Image 1 (spheres, rainbow, N blue to C red):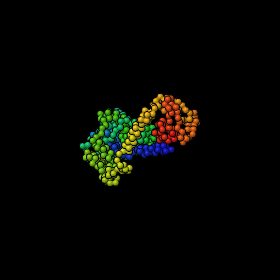
Image 2: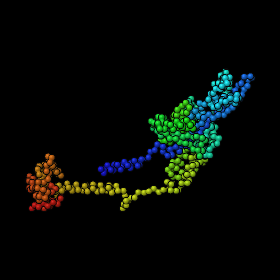
Image 3: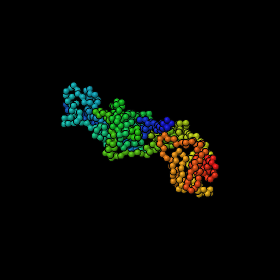
Length: 499
């Protein structure tokens, strides 16, 4: 039971020493949020309506209409941004919107200003309206050209009211495919970026979806929604998480947003879908392929390196130590919103009771030792001492067994035969110097004690005849030979009580 208790105690200590795992660890998204971007696209339509009922007239109108909006993230400091293709190439056709607008204005009919195709009650006008909708044919009554303007709003403080005009470097052949944009970043250190993962591996289970519902600022930071893959790495969401993800996609703001692996704090995909496409995660492998098609590659910048160094101190509550590093971030990018906020917090907590750098490490009580040496030194010394005593005692024992050749002048027992007095049976043996008589094997349950008891045996030393050597005496306590006229055993000191 004591051993089991020790094992159980060690197991409990092991459990306490293990990090407490949580599917969404605190601070796991801090590496990602500075690279968040809001992406908005707008269509500019120039449409010409032809009216040839009495005489040919051309009615020219220009309209700007929101096309799509959503989220994205920066992958290079010089302003390369990743989002979903549906954000820059919407399924909504701006030419339909323009046809509805120009017809309603020119012919004074009620047609909603939307992206749907409508019919009107006047047969002649209805024919002209249907011929105004794309695609253009020889009988079309309208001619429209569309240009798309994309604006990116990086997460900066103060925010950029007008955003940054983005160039479309690449758009996929599906609304859920990645699209690659490029902006002029401004600032000597470039834009903050996200760490892009290598693959969406089979171990990815706990994720966060990063969303920007509008142009970001310190008062409107990125929103993070948690979800889980089931099974891990499958891109299929748990049953209880699916309604939440569907709602995010339906709202539109989360489309193109980064999908963050909480285990490694890196981006492993983007959220896509909407319209006729269900909610899905486009994996990081597709993002990298799109980057190659656009002729660019993901990389981190100098701002990111210093910022992550500051995070290490800040999250370890070394507030005073993190202040100069956060200030270095702001020298490279003075509008870095997370660095601004963390610097404010660090300055308020530096050198206070919350600053781990001001706390002295507690030392465990140490038992007083006269020499200050490790206890193992004393153990080793004891082992050496015992070995030395053995080394001295063994030669002395062998010398006493050869006592016949010693100063006593007694005959040697070399090649002699003798009879043992214990156990009760006697046995003759022949041995050289220092050999002991073998103890005969006893059947189970036999009594191995001396027949008369130890006290009586000690009072009756056994006498044996050994060839021509005369009578020899042996100690019944230890079996060693007694010298002539010795009344006590020279080896163990037992009394012989014999003349």
